Length: 327
Image (tube, rainbow, N blue to C red):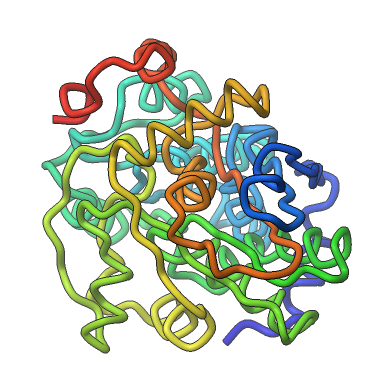
């Protein structure tokens, strides 16, 4: 487990490098659900997603020698962008390994930040194998996208901001993939507001953490294209941190399908005036679907990222057939 003290220390460490994002009430969702719903606008973060928090916390704790050698990670896009930004800020250099499923807009942005990009295989596991090879051969420092205590502590600062801004929070909806954000937010919220529920939300196509929690141990899943591409990938068969934390701390995991995710993206744009990627819209999607109609009390929904291909976003907003967009 990651302690509240460790997460508070992470906030002190990264405060000059990341934004404290707003928590704003959604009138439309509050009316729909019948209770106060507020949106944590983490997609307003400097690199367009929450990932900058964990990447920055990890990079700032490297030695100068480790920074000089460079950092490396596997990524579905947002962690790679965040790590590239954080590495450049301290004079280091990042190498990011990604599968062919990562959208081109995310790949090109990582290159723009000066990172070396390697496209390997068709899964996060394939990309991770390349990371491990380069760590062994070139001595690079691996900063994993989720299963690392410094990364989890950094992501947990989102939970600090929610609990402080909404002292009576009754439920927090968190996008769930490898579990870095969900584990960090859950650790914080459960420590500060023990009665609050923390619910992970993910797509129903290749939901690795959900499958692993159900099995009682990490399992491999097939990866699929999804509007929520940032939620793709496995959790790692040797997962040491996020799996046990998510298993112990999450009150529930809710699955949403592609059309529900599309509805979440459209709602964010049409009613909240926010551009979010599929992964960032899953909490809204879960509320719109009626799958969380039982929730009582103030609800916080984390909008985790905005790094969606804008052509895809226009297609979703215009209601084109979602199946053709992700297959």
